Length: 412
Image: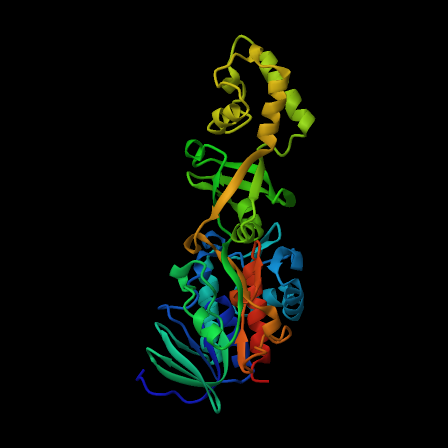
């Protein structure tokens, strides 16, 4: 394409991720002329990494409680484009859903199927896609907006930002549009990494690195228990990760940003009651008296890397003869197994985050259309809004719903 000014479009979408492609398709189906500008070499790159490459694109167990941020905004947008609407849309464009415990994937098991189907539907709907396109300047004109890029100048009556924030910058969400959006007068809630791990202290992490184990986590912020999550905990040399950590990462990340104390207690045996565990420990130590030491007696109950670390935290030598372990020590060990405390020091950086928490102040947008209250004709979708979901397809559902709402209302 030559680098001359394009003809006036009805809608210009900046960003060809999940929300941007849904916006473009929805608007084009209404008969509007739509161009999408994407600075990566192909659309939908972030989609390819979702669901471990399988693309968990929605969840049947949908509720505003599965989101952080503005719950009023979540409720308004999700009721306009529901999970049922999402399933119908994807069936229509060739993605047959496969459900497991509420999690919905493409039947192909491949995230590329979803990205390719959306790209094909944009083409089918008449959307113009421009890739490897860097935004250089954006300004208002008498007739709308003018965007000067490395691929030429584009003019449009309406502008939709679908650029994401800063999570997973290699996939395209590098935060490059944030300063430009701020230049229009918009403010952001603090943008922080979410759905990621944390650097932590309180455990000898170098000795347990690589351990994956079922656990129940309790998040305490300034000493107050605010959330519990269960799932596969992953221990690393830097600290903690895994699904249950991801699920509490948004409030934990905000707490650290606000200089509050954030602590997790880990229950390594969540299927045991307190009494059951104490009795099981007593039985093992009594059975092995004079035969095995403390560490050997715990084999088969805990991951072998965890055993010496937890025993040390309980004040019990690893090779202590079991007959020498007192009832008080057993009670202490039981507490360490079920309420092992670790203090969160620092959230991992944006490159390790799947999404961001924070975004544009909700009071600055019309919550029913996602149009800017400050600059009419500008719309925001996806992660740019002050909404982030837990793991399980919730963030992609937010992308579909917000993109559909903006695409349905833009230019009205």
